Length: 258
Image 1 (spheres, helix red, strand yellow):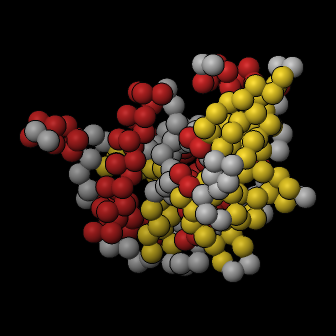
Image 2 (image 1 turned 180 degrees about the horizontal axis):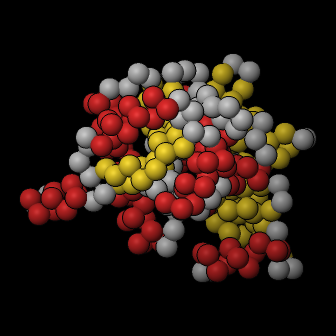
């Protein structure tokens, strides 16, 4: 990287909003952020409703978000913001470590434990900056999308598993359950197919029919099944044909150009 490029990266401003119901905690974090080159504190909030108003007005790049707040907590707020296209990156700042797994589910940029040091907050900003840079490149190439962690969190009675998205072959509803089939294992999940489709929207997953979401990178062949119907042939975790509904066939033909 040339010196000129390094300088341009340093001068790229990240606009941050601090959200915490404790005023002293907000003041401390604002002070820490103010010491970091290329960071501007664009606002603050003490509750979820106030935060949403600040986000709408200021359009920040990142929220430094406490989890335990009165009313709607920080995790619920992050879930609401995750549904908004082009929403801010989320850095959770909390004194509790039990929320780390749910943080993965909303694709948080970082998870910082209180009391947070200057160095730790600088690390979080570096992660946010990298994600914003990646998003900018992706938007230029594809016209949209958000950076995610590359893993899907699957909760079960034993805890949670972090499954690489690239290992997922297809997801189907079966006997009132949703099953996630990877290259080696199958997992049951409490999430609905619609929720999984939303979480995987930045990857090459396609709704083949009402009950199946398939990873297009795992499709080896599109077979004509007669009467304007098609099937998707995959070889992992086993050789398997997935019916393609007629309502989805036109979209897939345009997508794959066949």
